[in-house]
Image (cartoon, rainbow, N blue to C red; front, side):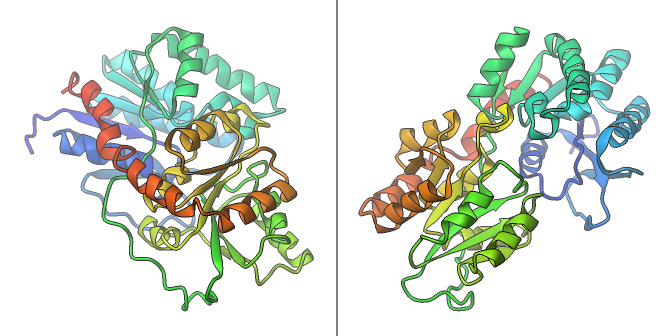
Length: 373
């Protein structure tokens, strides 16, 4: 690669390991001929990384809260102040302020990728002061941005209306690749004829339907629920499994590397995404797991949110549950598992992945970055 190729510094606030969107973006940019540095933070359980570009993870004294975000801003600011780079890519609002200041001070190009409706996230609900701070940061910087991406059309429309800047949509869709080798059902102790329901995610938090899904398993026939991932609601969900004597019907598996997760997804009969519209960030979300299910040919059961409804109805890949209650979820799951439409939903999902894939989605990225080469 030419030493004169332009350099992009990519900023995130996580530990880099499981951010599939950022990994795909970096791979795309590397393929376009850019040099890259990916910058995040180190956590106690962070594992060594090998990437075909530079990575840097800061050791920070705080993990959450105002002190974490304050220290992060300063670390990123001073890092960028001396970093030899041409373009700064800020992922999410918590990295945008130092990126913006340095881009202005040093005359660098700035790209912003908003992975969610940050100021309406669950963590800011009923917390007026931090919400006002982030809104002030966003309101000051956003109207001055030239290159902005976000994860779905609903959030993009909100930003366009608020700040009158062009916002492009790049959904977090998997690469189109060979189907994963399915996990072995016998090794997992699944009986013949026993269906698999799957909830996967890095943020299985309150108000995302996990608790109601567990409770629904009281009435779902001949099925096992696999919950794979991490999140703040998991401990409560595990206690509920014990309380309802559902140990034989619900299994919890810690967060897996992406390729291992694909093996579990491949054996699922239904993949669920049940966010509740109690926070606007959830109401307007289009979770990554939805695309993982589609790529595995797994029919969807989703809550009635705009982006999820659009996905299911456009591609006819499953059902929409009208209310996120245990009873409604159980009814929908039983109907799906007994439905003659299951074969058609699977075929439609596999057809949809030929369109809904990173190879197609990244064309939007390539168009913008081609102007910055």
